[in-house]
Image (cartoon, rainbow, N blue to C red; front, side, top):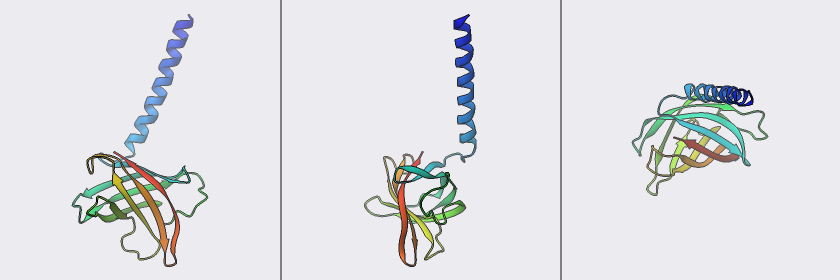
Length: 144
């Protein structure tokens, strides 16, 4: 009897965890990177990045990011949906602008692929800048 109860409990737990993972995967477009932005080690933004052009001189794509909780940092315009632009420089640094039409009030990402470009994780730093310069920054990971 104890073994049957444990088996049923384990099966229920696995079913619950399996459904939760599928729900998260359904919200991310096929081929997109799962994005987490952190501030002082705490997640403040989650969502996805999807490259539509992988020409290293003219990277383009879409993003969808959501605030996590009530962050103790100014996040800038990286909440919601948008299109990014960027490039990869000669030493492999990926530089993306989440708001490419804005000279101020912009969020930028600068990082490196941890293996094969566009097929491996991208990690680096996010920055929120305005006319006065740097407003806030943190780290990010975009997992493939």
